[in-house]
Length: 357
Image (cartoon, rainbow, N blue to C red; front, side, top):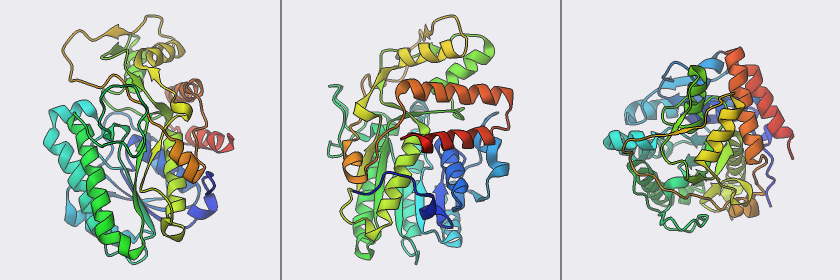
Protein backbone atom coordinates (compact mmCIF):
# COMPACT_ATOMS: atom_id res chain seq x y z
CA UNK A 1 0.00 0.00 0.00
CA UNK A 2 1.26 3.48 -0.87
CA UNK A 3 2.00 5.74 2.08
CA UNK A 4 -0.68 8.29 2.89
CA UNK A 5 1.86 10.93 3.88
CA UNK A 6 2.23 14.07 1.80
CA UNK A 7 5.90 13.69 0.88
CA UNK A 8 7.71 17.02 0.73
CA UNK A 9 10.72 15.39 -0.97
CA UNK A 10 8.48 14.25 -3.82
CA UNK A 11 7.23 17.80 -4.40
CA UNK A 12 10.52 19.66 -3.91
CA UNK A 13 11.53 21.16 -7.26
CA UNK A 14 8.62 19.46 -9.03
CA UNK A 15 6.99 21.49 -11.81
CA UNK A 16 3.30 21.69 -10.91
CA UNK A 17 0.46 23.26 -12.85
CA UNK A 18 -2.29 24.26 -10.43
CA UNK A 19 -5.49 25.61 -11.94
CA UNK A 20 -7.89 27.54 -9.75
CA UNK A 21 -5.04 28.69 -7.50
CA UNK A 22 -6.84 31.89 -6.53
CA UNK A 23 -9.87 30.02 -5.21
CA UNK A 24 -10.43 28.78 -1.67
CA UNK A 25 -9.07 25.23 -2.04
CA UNK A 26 -6.60 26.32 -4.68
CA UNK A 27 -4.95 28.90 -2.43
CA UNK A 28 -4.48 26.32 0.33
CA UNK A 29 -2.98 23.93 -2.24
CA UNK A 30 -0.69 26.69 -3.54
CA UNK A 31 0.53 27.51 -0.03
CA UNK A 32 1.22 23.85 0.78
CA UNK A 33 3.01 23.17 -2.52
CA UNK A 34 5.11 26.32 -2.22
CA UNK A 35 5.99 25.41 1.36
CA UNK A 36 7.38 22.09 0.09
CA UNK A 37 9.48 23.76 -2.60
CA UNK A 38 7.41 22.88 -5.67
CA UNK A 39 7.75 25.09 -8.75
CA UNK A 40 4.11 26.11 -9.07
CA UNK A 41 2.46 27.71 -12.07
CA UNK A 42 -1.05 28.91 -11.32
CA UNK A 43 -3.79 29.35 -13.90
CA UNK A 44 -7.00 31.00 -12.74
CA UNK A 45 -9.27 33.98 -12.88
CA UNK A 46 -8.15 36.80 -10.63
CA UNK A 47 -9.50 36.52 -7.10
CA UNK A 48 -12.67 38.54 -6.70
CA UNK A 49 -14.54 40.00 -3.75
CA UNK A 50 -13.41 42.23 -0.91
CA UNK A 51 -11.57 39.37 0.79
CA UNK A 52 -9.79 36.27 -0.47
CA UNK A 53 -7.24 33.87 0.96
CA UNK A 54 -5.13 34.17 -2.19
CA UNK A 55 -4.96 37.97 -2.04
CA UNK A 56 -4.04 37.75 1.63
CA UNK A 57 -1.05 35.43 1.06
CA UNK A 58 0.04 35.97 -2.55
CA UNK A 59 3.01 38.19 -1.68
CA UNK A 60 4.55 35.24 0.13
CA UNK A 61 3.98 32.66 -2.60
CA UNK A 62 6.88 32.02 -5.01
CA UNK A 63 4.73 31.02 -7.96
CA UNK A 64 4.03 32.13 -11.51
CA UNK A 65 0.45 33.27 -12.08
CA UNK A 66 -1.49 33.38 -15.33
CA UNK A 67 -4.88 35.04 -14.95
CA UNK A 68 -6.77 33.19 -17.68
CA UNK A 69 -10.33 32.05 -18.23
CA UNK A 70 -10.01 28.32 -18.92
CA UNK A 71 -12.73 28.68 -21.56
CA UNK A 72 -10.06 30.49 -23.63
CA UNK A 73 -8.37 27.45 -25.18
CA UNK A 74 -5.59 29.38 -26.94
CA UNK A 75 -4.48 31.32 -23.87
CA UNK A 76 -4.72 28.23 -21.70
CA UNK A 77 -2.66 26.13 -24.13
CA UNK A 78 0.06 28.79 -24.29
CA UNK A 79 0.33 28.92 -20.48
CA UNK A 80 0.41 25.12 -20.20
CA UNK A 81 3.14 24.74 -22.82
CA UNK A 82 5.16 27.53 -21.26
CA UNK A 83 5.11 25.87 -17.84
CA UNK A 84 5.72 22.33 -19.18
CA UNK A 85 4.42 20.70 -15.96
CA UNK A 86 5.22 17.25 -14.64
CA UNK A 87 2.15 17.19 -12.39
CA UNK A 88 -1.24 18.83 -12.95
CA UNK A 89 -3.85 19.54 -10.29
CA UNK A 90 -6.97 20.95 -11.94
CA UNK A 91 -9.21 22.79 -9.49
CA UNK A 92 -10.50 25.69 -11.60
CA UNK A 93 -14.29 25.57 -11.77
CA UNK A 94 -17.57 27.36 -11.33
CA UNK A 95 -18.16 25.76 -7.95
CA UNK A 96 -21.35 27.33 -6.60
CA UNK A 97 -24.65 25.47 -6.84
CA UNK A 98 -26.91 28.52 -6.62
CA UNK A 99 -24.87 30.40 -9.21
CA UNK A 100 -25.25 27.42 -11.56
CA UNK A 101 -29.01 28.01 -11.61
CA UNK A 102 -28.44 31.68 -12.49
CA UNK A 103 -25.68 31.00 -15.03
CA UNK A 104 -26.05 27.46 -16.37
CA UNK A 105 -24.30 28.08 -19.70
CA UNK A 106 -21.26 29.61 -17.99
CA UNK A 107 -21.21 26.69 -15.54
CA UNK A 108 -21.18 24.04 -18.27
CA UNK A 109 -18.67 25.96 -20.38
CA UNK A 110 -16.29 26.30 -17.45
CA UNK A 111 -16.66 22.92 -15.80
CA UNK A 112 -16.92 20.75 -18.91
CA UNK A 113 -15.29 22.57 -21.82
CA UNK A 114 -12.74 24.28 -19.59
CA UNK A 115 -11.57 20.84 -18.48
CA UNK A 116 -11.59 19.55 -22.06
CA UNK A 117 -9.48 22.55 -23.09
CA UNK A 118 -6.97 21.74 -20.36
CA UNK A 119 -6.74 18.06 -21.25
CA UNK A 120 -6.26 18.94 -24.92
CA UNK A 121 -3.41 21.28 -23.94
CA UNK A 122 -1.79 18.51 -21.89
CA UNK A 123 -1.80 15.92 -24.69
CA UNK A 124 1.56 16.79 -26.22
CA UNK A 125 3.52 17.64 -23.07
CA UNK A 126 6.80 15.69 -23.15
CA UNK A 127 7.38 15.35 -19.40
CA UNK A 128 3.86 15.00 -17.98
CA UNK A 129 3.70 12.33 -15.26
CA UNK A 130 0.12 12.59 -13.95
CA UNK A 131 -2.97 14.80 -13.88
CA UNK A 132 -5.78 14.92 -11.32
CA UNK A 133 -9.09 16.55 -12.21
CA UNK A 134 -11.09 17.68 -9.17
CA UNK A 135 -14.85 17.32 -9.42
CA UNK A 136 -17.28 17.08 -6.50
CA UNK A 137 -19.12 14.91 -4.01
CA UNK A 138 -22.24 15.90 -5.96
CA UNK A 139 -21.39 13.92 -9.12
CA UNK A 140 -23.47 10.93 -8.06
CA UNK A 141 -27.06 10.17 -8.99
CA UNK A 142 -28.66 10.99 -5.65
CA UNK A 143 -32.01 9.35 -4.83
CA UNK A 144 -31.92 10.59 -1.23
CA UNK A 145 -31.65 7.14 0.39
CA UNK A 146 -28.95 8.40 2.78
CA UNK A 147 -26.39 5.82 1.67
CA UNK A 148 -22.76 6.91 1.40
CA UNK A 149 -21.73 6.93 -2.26
CA UNK A 150 -18.91 4.72 -3.56
CA UNK A 151 -16.87 5.31 -6.69
CA UNK A 152 -18.81 2.71 -8.68
CA UNK A 153 -22.21 4.35 -8.10
CA UNK A 154 -23.93 5.89 -11.16
CA UNK A 155 -23.06 9.46 -12.00
CA UNK A 156 -25.84 12.00 -12.31
CA UNK A 157 -26.95 15.36 -11.02
CA UNK A 158 -30.13 17.42 -11.06
CA UNK A 159 -28.60 20.88 -10.64
CA UNK A 160 -26.57 22.47 -13.43
CA UNK A 161 -23.55 22.39 -11.11
CA UNK A 162 -23.77 18.72 -10.18
CA UNK A 163 -24.58 17.58 -13.70
CA UNK A 164 -21.72 19.67 -15.12
CA UNK A 165 -19.33 17.92 -12.75
CA UNK A 166 -20.73 14.50 -13.69
CA UNK A 167 -20.27 15.42 -17.36
CA UNK A 168 -16.71 16.49 -16.53
CA UNK A 169 -16.10 13.04 -15.06
CA UNK A 170 -17.34 11.32 -18.23
CA UNK A 171 -15.32 13.59 -20.51
CA UNK A 172 -12.16 13.08 -18.45
CA UNK A 173 -12.50 9.30 -18.43
CA UNK A 174 -13.03 9.23 -22.19
CA UNK A 175 -10.10 11.51 -22.99
CA UNK A 176 -7.85 9.63 -20.56
CA UNK A 177 -8.57 6.33 -22.31
CA UNK A 178 -8.41 7.80 -25.81
CA UNK A 179 -5.21 9.81 -25.58
CA UNK A 180 -3.26 9.27 -22.35
CA UNK A 181 -3.55 5.56 -21.62
CA UNK A 182 -1.29 4.55 -24.51
CA UNK A 183 1.42 6.86 -23.13
CA UNK A 184 1.08 5.44 -19.59
CA UNK A 185 0.11 8.86 -18.24
CA UNK A 186 -2.59 8.50 -15.57
CA UNK A 187 -5.40 11.05 -15.66
CA UNK A 188 -7.76 10.59 -12.72
CA UNK A 189 -10.56 12.40 -10.89
CA UNK A 190 -10.91 13.29 -7.21
CA UNK A 191 -14.27 13.71 -5.50
CA UNK A 192 -14.20 15.54 -2.17
CA UNK A 193 -16.78 15.99 0.53
CA UNK A 194 -18.18 19.30 1.76
CA UNK A 195 -14.99 21.30 2.28
CA UNK A 196 -14.73 24.05 4.88
CA UNK A 197 -11.85 25.92 6.49
CA UNK A 198 -10.37 29.35 6.96
CA UNK A 199 -10.11 31.62 3.96
CA UNK A 200 -13.38 30.80 2.23
CA UNK A 201 -15.18 34.06 1.43
CA UNK A 202 -17.49 32.69 -1.29
CA UNK A 203 -21.07 33.84 -1.65
CA UNK A 204 -23.87 31.50 -0.57
CA UNK A 205 -21.54 29.23 1.42
CA UNK A 206 -22.32 28.37 5.02
CA UNK A 207 -19.13 29.28 6.91
CA UNK A 208 -18.45 32.53 5.00
CA UNK A 209 -22.10 33.50 5.50
CA UNK A 210 -21.75 32.91 9.24
CA UNK A 211 -18.52 34.93 9.36
CA UNK A 212 -20.19 37.82 7.52
CA UNK A 213 -23.16 37.60 9.90
CA UNK A 214 -20.75 37.74 12.86
CA UNK A 215 -19.13 40.85 11.40
CA UNK A 216 -22.56 42.47 11.22
CA UNK A 217 -23.68 41.16 14.62
CA UNK A 218 -26.53 39.25 13.01
CA UNK A 219 -27.76 35.67 12.82
CA UNK A 220 -27.10 33.68 9.70
CA UNK A 221 -30.07 32.65 7.56
CA UNK A 222 -30.22 29.04 6.37
CA UNK A 223 -31.95 27.52 3.37
CA UNK A 224 -31.98 23.83 4.35
CA UNK A 225 -30.93 23.45 8.02
CA UNK A 226 -31.80 19.74 8.10
CA UNK A 227 -29.59 18.82 5.15
CA UNK A 228 -26.66 16.53 5.96
CA UNK A 229 -23.24 16.85 4.35
CA UNK A 230 -19.84 15.09 4.63
CA UNK A 231 -18.04 18.11 6.13
CA UNK A 232 -14.25 18.06 6.14
CA UNK A 233 -11.42 20.54 6.51
CA UNK A 234 -9.88 21.85 3.30
CA UNK A 235 -6.53 20.33 4.27
CA UNK A 236 -8.12 16.87 4.32
CA UNK A 237 -9.14 17.10 0.68
CA UNK A 238 -5.91 18.76 -0.46
CA UNK A 239 -3.84 16.11 1.33
CA UNK A 240 -5.87 13.43 -0.45
CA UNK A 241 -5.23 15.05 -3.82
CA UNK A 242 -1.49 15.34 -3.20
CA UNK A 243 -1.15 11.77 -1.95
CA UNK A 244 -3.17 10.53 -4.93
CA UNK A 245 -0.93 12.45 -7.34
CA UNK A 246 2.19 11.05 -5.70
CA UNK A 247 0.89 7.56 -6.28
CA UNK A 248 -0.33 8.27 -9.82
CA UNK A 249 3.06 9.68 -10.81
CA UNK A 250 4.81 6.51 -9.60
CA UNK A 251 4.94 3.67 -12.15
CA UNK A 252 2.21 5.26 -14.24
CA UNK A 253 -0.31 4.85 -11.45
CA UNK A 254 -0.31 1.08 -11.93
CA UNK A 255 -3.13 -0.64 -10.06
CA UNK A 256 -4.78 2.57 -8.88
CA UNK A 257 -8.44 3.48 -9.44
CA UNK A 258 -9.18 6.24 -11.94
CA UNK A 259 -11.44 8.03 -9.44
CA UNK A 260 -11.42 8.33 -5.65
CA UNK A 261 -13.64 9.80 -2.95
CA UNK A 262 -12.09 11.88 -0.18
CA UNK A 263 -14.42 12.35 2.77
CA UNK A 264 -14.60 12.20 6.57
CA UNK A 265 -13.65 8.96 8.25
CA UNK A 266 -16.59 6.64 8.75
CA UNK A 267 -18.74 8.81 6.49
CA UNK A 268 -19.38 11.25 9.36
CA UNK A 269 -22.21 13.63 8.45
CA UNK A 270 -23.62 16.61 10.35
CA UNK A 271 -26.63 18.77 9.54
CA UNK A 272 -26.31 22.32 8.26
CA UNK A 273 -28.20 23.57 11.31
CA UNK A 274 -25.83 21.81 13.73
CA UNK A 275 -22.80 23.28 12.00
CA UNK A 276 -24.35 26.75 11.99
CA UNK A 277 -25.25 26.60 15.66
CA UNK A 278 -21.75 25.51 16.69
CA UNK A 279 -19.95 28.07 14.53
CA UNK A 280 -22.23 30.94 15.57
CA UNK A 281 -21.53 30.10 19.20
CA UNK A 282 -17.78 30.10 18.50
CA UNK A 283 -18.11 33.54 16.91
CA UNK A 284 -20.06 34.82 19.91
CA UNK A 285 -23.42 35.15 18.17
CA UNK A 286 -26.08 34.66 20.85
CA UNK A 287 -29.09 34.30 18.56
CA UNK A 288 -29.91 31.06 16.77
CA UNK A 289 -29.89 30.82 13.00
CA UNK A 290 -32.95 32.00 11.08
CA UNK A 291 -34.75 30.21 8.25
CA UNK A 292 -34.90 31.83 4.82
CA UNK A 293 -38.59 32.45 4.13
CA UNK A 294 -38.50 32.70 0.34
CA UNK A 295 -38.41 30.07 -2.38
CA UNK A 296 -34.96 28.60 -3.02
CA UNK A 297 -33.45 26.44 -5.78
CA UNK A 298 -33.74 22.77 -4.80
CA UNK A 299 -30.85 21.06 -3.01
CA UNK A 300 -30.42 17.45 -1.95
CA UNK A 301 -31.20 16.73 1.71
CA UNK A 302 -28.74 13.87 2.19
CA UNK A 303 -25.21 13.54 0.90
CA UNK A 304 -22.45 11.25 2.18
CA UNK A 305 -19.26 9.76 0.74
CA UNK A 306 -17.64 6.40 1.36
CA UNK A 307 -13.88 7.04 1.25
CA UNK A 308 -12.81 3.49 2.09
CA UNK A 309 -11.28 2.94 -1.36
CA UNK A 310 -8.85 5.82 -0.80
CA UNK A 311 -7.81 4.17 2.44
CA UNK A 312 -7.44 0.74 0.85
CA UNK A 313 -5.46 1.92 -2.17
CA UNK A 314 -3.52 4.91 -0.83
CA UNK A 315 -3.58 4.46 2.92
CA UNK A 316 -5.26 7.87 3.08
CA UNK A 317 -7.80 8.74 5.75
CA UNK A 318 -9.14 11.93 7.25
CA UNK A 319 -7.42 13.14 10.43
CA UNK A 320 -9.67 15.76 12.02
CA UNK A 321 -13.14 15.18 13.46
CA UNK A 322 -15.97 17.58 12.69
CA UNK A 323 -15.36 19.30 16.05
CA UNK A 324 -11.66 19.76 15.30
CA UNK A 325 -12.49 20.94 11.79
CA UNK A 326 -14.83 23.63 13.12
CA UNK A 327 -12.30 24.71 15.74
CA UNK A 328 -9.51 25.09 13.15
CA UNK A 329 -11.87 26.97 10.84
CA UNK A 330 -13.06 29.45 13.44
CA UNK A 331 -9.50 29.95 14.72
CA UNK A 332 -8.42 30.98 11.21
CA UNK A 333 -11.18 33.57 10.83
CA UNK A 334 -10.46 34.99 14.29
CA UNK A 335 -6.78 35.30 13.40
CA UNK A 336 -7.75 36.97 10.11
CA UNK A 337 -9.93 39.48 11.96
CA UNK A 338 -6.96 40.39 14.14
CA UNK A 339 -4.32 40.46 11.38
CA UNK A 340 -5.33 40.18 7.70
CA UNK A 341 -1.71 39.21 6.83
CA UNK A 342 -2.59 35.65 7.57
CA UNK A 343 0.20 33.75 5.80
CA UNK A 344 2.09 32.63 8.93
CA UNK A 345 -1.11 31.37 10.55
CA UNK A 346 -2.06 29.51 7.37
CA UNK A 347 1.32 27.75 7.29
CA UNK A 348 1.00 26.96 11.00
CA UNK A 349 -2.29 25.14 10.34
CA UNK A 350 -0.64 23.16 7.54
CA UNK A 351 2.17 22.24 9.94
CA UNK A 352 -0.39 21.22 12.56
CA UNK A 353 -2.22 19.05 10.04
CA UNK A 354 1.00 17.36 8.91
CA UNK A 355 1.90 16.62 12.53
CA UNK A 356 -1.45 14.94 13.22
CA UNK A 357 -1.30 11.17 12.93
